[in-house]
Every structure is written in structure tokens, then in C-alpha cells.
Image (cartoon, rainbow, N blue to C red; front, side, top):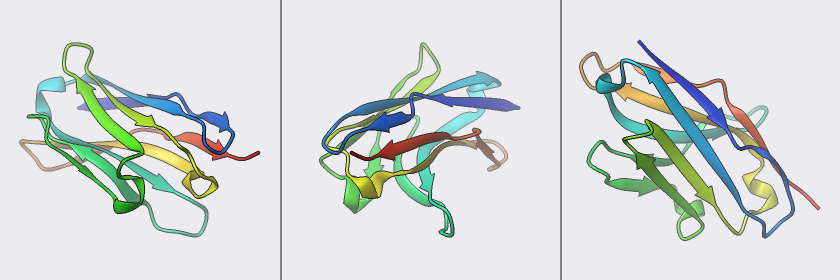
Length: 117
């Protein structure tokens, strides 16, 4: 089993920055790709960015050049650095880890990001 805990959300003005953290605990060796997703009321959860065990990254087009995903394998933490934030980035952000043995997904509880003046 893997447990994920997100942190770092909050209220920020347009153009500002936030860094989200996703700390993993439990059977860390089972984790392969980790991703950040976001969801707003009435909409489906959408992919924001992913990072593989080897460090390869992928981004949703709307966040390219503004968001950076990274991972610290010593601290068992994945980060999402968000710069030049826009009101449309407002959402609950979730961290997801994929189990490389079973293919199961593990989700965190989410952290609210609000971009507003």
C-alpha cells in the first residue's frame, strides 16, 4: 500500500506562484509514474503533469512553460512548481501514483488552489 499526502495549496493572486508537494509513505518501491491532476466542480478530473520513475515528464498544453513537475526520490516527494498562475488554474489538485506491479492507482486527498485577486 502507498499513502499520498498533498500540501502547499492556498490562495494566490494572478501571476503568482505556488509549490505543491506530494509526500509518499508506505511501499514506496511500488511507485512508478506520479502525476498531478486537478478538478473543478462539475468537471472531470484532468491531467496536469506526470513524471516517471526515471524522471521523464509530460505536461498538459495549458500549463507548459508555467508549471514544473519534479521528484526527490530521497524524500519520497513529488513537487509541482506553479508559476504565472491564472484564475483558470483554480481547482483541487490531486496527486496520483501508479503501482508498477499491480497497475493500481493511489490518490491523495487533494489540496485547494485558488487564483483570485
